[in-house]
Structure formats: C-alpha cells, structure tokens
Length: 560
Image (cartoon, rainbow, N blue to C red; front, top):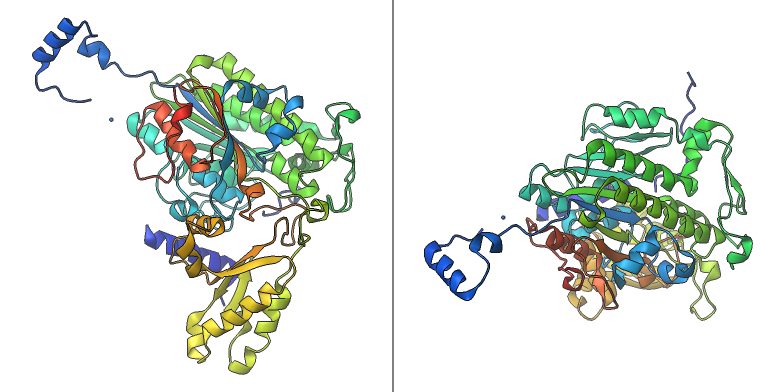
C-alpha cells in the first residue's frame, strides 16, 4: 500500500490524465542578530440618423469596467455568522451587507470542504474535480519551488492546479492587468489565482511575508521593507482581550473540549519574546491585521487600480479558521474574532477607498468553508448523538486476516473518509478485493458516528436525487482510485481538531456570498447559489469572457 502522500498524489495524477500542517507550531529559534464588423457602415449611419439613435461610435463605446476587483475570503466563516453576529457588526462586513448583493443561501457544492479546494474554486468557477485541487493533501506543497530569501516552511506552487481563473481572463482582455494575492496560508494565497505568475505572498512563522521560486528569485524591495519594520514582532507581550464589554458575549468563557486544555479563557497573551510572538500571533485576531496591512502596502506600491486594465487583489484572512479549530464555532473566542475581523475588513475598505476611487472598485466577499458545532455541544435534538469517530478498529479487523493470504496489511487503507485498495496486490494474491471491501464496509457501518458507507462508483449513479452523491461527483473525476466513501452522522468528526469541517453537510458548505460596488446591483437573495458562481459573475461585471467551460453561472440579479 502506498503511503498517504503517494495515494493522494495518485488522485491528483488521475485528474490530470482526465483533463493543516500545524498552523501554530513554533519554528526553530534563530539568533537575533474580445467588436462586430459592419458590412454596410453608411447604411447603418443613415438609419441611426433617421431613428434619432446614438451614432455607431458612441453605441459601441467600451462599457465601463472596474479598475480593481477585490476578493475577500475569510477562512472558516460560516454562513450563519452574518445573522448571528450581525447586530454587533459595525465595520467592513456590515458595510458590505448593507450595500451589497447578498446571497444568503450560498454553498460550496463539493464534499470535502477544506481550505485548498475551497479557495481553488472561487476564481476558477469550477469544481474540484476540474481544478485538480480535490483536498488539502493535493494542494500546493512543492519541494522544487522553495521559499526565496529564507522563510520557515515548505516550498509551494500551483503546479497541481488545472485550467484558468479570472486572472487569466482579465489578462486575456488586457495583458497589463496586475494581481496581488495575500494570505497567512500558502494555499490560500496561491490557489485563488491558479497557475498565474503574479505577486503572491504568505506568512512565515518567523514574522515575514514570503513567496517561492515559482513566482520569483527574490523578494521585492517593498516586501523586504515591510518585513524589516517588524510589525509581527511588535505583538510580543500583547494580550487578546474582549473587544466589547463581557455582557455582550452570551457564550461562556470556557466550554467542554475547547482548546487543548490550556489557555482557553480570556485574556489570551502572546509570548513576550518578539520572535515567539511572531509565530503565535497566527492564533489570534492580530494575524488578520497583519495581512490587511501587508495587502494595503502592496496595493500602494504596485499601484493596483490605476492601470489600463482591471487589476485584482485577492485577500484571504485565516485567523478565524485557526481560532475556530481551537475553540469551536460556539465559543466566546470565535464571537470576538468575528467582531474583530469585521473591523479588519473595515480598515481594508476604508483604506482602499482613500487610495482609489471607490466608484471603480468591485468587491466580492465569501469564505472557503464553514464548520460544525463541537460534538459535545450539539443540540439534544441531534440524534444519534455526534461522536469523535475512529475507523481504526474496523480497518484493523480486516487487516488482521491479510497476512495469512500473503497480503501486506497496508494494501488496504483509509485516508480520512476515503478507502483505497491495491487491486493489483489482491489479484496477485488471488484474494477478491471486492469481497474484502464489502466486509470492510459492513465493519465501518457498525462504527458509532458512521451514517453511511458507499461505493464511489455507485454514488455517481444518483447525483440528482442524493445531495451527498452530487457533492462527491463534484469533488472527484469518476476514474479516481477511491473505493469507499464514509459519511459520518451530522456533527460527528474525525480526531485531530477540537472543531472540524469537510463533512459535506450544509453547516460546512454554507458560506456568505456578497458582491459590492462598481457594476453591482444591491439586493438580498435567498435562492440556492454556489460559490462556483462567483467567478463568472465577476467576469460579467468586468466585461471579460472565461477561457473555458465553467461549472458556475452568472448571478444576473447581482449585475447592474
């Protein structure tokens, strides 16, 4: 049986043929030291004069296009947060809700709602089965593209990404369109813009924004200057306290299973040491402030929004995800974080509108996925009761009989909720692989917290009547080497984080979707829409055509 990474790479290669690292680990210490052709132009002019219509010249004038498109993605920002915390939102998110085209029933319509596939769909307008980014493990890690100028972390690039994005469509219309993509996470910075070689930066735990060899051989001066200013290190000793009076937070300060048993009540203090604080700042709302400050520096230095074409800023804010994983979506911490990220988005918008003419900017706001309530905190009405699920016992029971059949036990394995089998090995040993899979499916169905176990090939036969099947069909192409798919009961999770996502249920797929500004017709819309609709809608606003067939459609209600 191949290793986990080899198996996931197998999935990636299959897709190509058809077409959290620990976010909070401390790095090693270092020493401080597209025009119709008129065949009869005179006749056309004569008719225009008779009818009192505008001349051909004015009628064909290029439509106004935004100078700058801004995509703001908040990692793990659940769709219901806008209603739940709305009365207390006074910043940028509140501004978008008040003045934008708000789609309240937007979903990621794929099964594995993780950061990498979520971000990859947004500006591509295509499902993971098409982008090739089908899970975090098939993401951006690339040892052939090491970080430039140092930095702590692995090399990264978009080489697994298939097809085009809005960036390519904008540059197809005007090759001088400029792009900046920024996040704390490498995959959240890289994947929204696909394979484009643009200004792409992410945060290194040593307090610097970095990039990889895929994008260039060195950091631009403005990036080095920002890093040298030491904003990250300045958070040494800073405390994360409640933004509002304690009475504004109905959640208890401590709930079962949150955090890791330590540091689970306010205030949350960062280490006094600046280097350590630069790493641990990722676990606080201050990380979003850092990313916004860096993005604004980039907008200024790169002169985004002042060129002959439509420029793009893609900004992904990650702190909500880190905090949500540690404390859960029903914690006081996530409540305060939502209030703070609202203000961070406010800072972004206020600053952008001072730097550039606000009437020429179009903004899209969304999230890469949602998150589920902690199993321990699920309402009593949720039955069967949610579990923290281990599939190890069921797998071990099947593996136990394999040595006697001269089969290595690793010839069958489970990666999350996906079951793989080495059919060649089973054939060589004259063991029926399908019988083995059937036996494993029975064992898995008997595991507390498991709702269903399906053959992937059979799921694809009922995508119209089965929403679970539909989302899996959007996740993978039909020829991937996946045998079984395990679906947990609602709010049940696999071990690894306090709170988790990637279930495919609506609480993980439901996200905000708002369009605001130039070219947008405000309103509030309740119909079911999908995040793959975001890219074609922005393309329509920008007056550019996608370079390929998309899964998404233009949300015409939002387009002026």
